[in-house]
Length: 329
Ligand SMILES: Cc1cc2nc3c(=O)[nH]c(=O)nc-3n(C[C@H](O)[C@H](O)[C@H](O)COP(=O)(O)O)c2cc1C
Image (cartoon, rainbow, N blue to C red):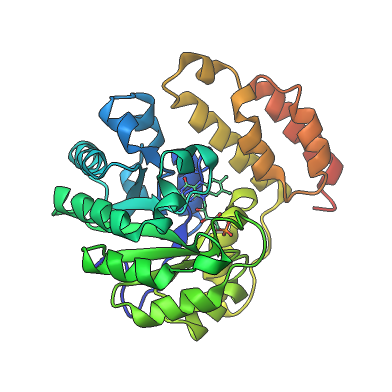
């Protein structure tokens, strides 16, 4: 049993998204009502080799709990040992295993969604991780299959359940689809109907109406929200408000959005383990571009960000943007 999942709850998960869902971003989403968070994936082998920077990736605060740490890899004993080290060091609420990543560098090492093609090995990895951390729940995150011809989410879910996984998140796309096209909620629904463990549905959730649809029409125990939160972390607030009142809250003002973005940038820079990252804002640009993507004039912001190198430059950019769009935002 996962204490955050019950008959009376329908948790909103923030999806793990490599390079974006750092601890400060997670905090922002938590403040807006995200219920459960998972770190972006870390490679099991790199944990064993003692790469210090990975501990920055999986860093979380108590207020972010319930918090999962996601691992990926191909070797069952390495995965088990990495789970144990993470568990001993930072005591997450759960360990999540990534069986969904479609990136070439992950597929090449027979990890992530590559393992959907090898259910037997996937079962072995999951079991060894489960056995390595008996006091901590292990969950798995999968896609519906490798491609349209080999959709096997139900088979994988049953294997995961049999070897002790405590929940299953399904991203309703195949590996070959990547992030394109529609998520297949019919398959997610079928798996949720057939398993005993809770299933968290994932794929293109963008509004409270999408959440209500999943809640009313499937046996899913919760939903996971990915890209929609990257440009608009307030989505959790909006959904919660709608579920409670049946109405949409007024959108955050443009000043408030910039204030949040600047605070976020300051936090993430100041917490970086690398000195140069505490001084120079350039490495933050993709994250800031993602956060401003839904704002009016986002293309201009994107261009202007090219010459932003200090936090004071970002504040200037924010002031200019606010004065330009205040009345129309
Ligand atoms: C930039 C980016 C990075 C991602 N990194 C991870 C990751 O580290 N682990 C993981 O399980 N999924 C990862 N995903 C997949 C998301 O968790 C999610 O399954 C996917 O985006 C579908 O949800 P959405 O349609 O709501 O975006 C990533 C997705 C994106 C766009």
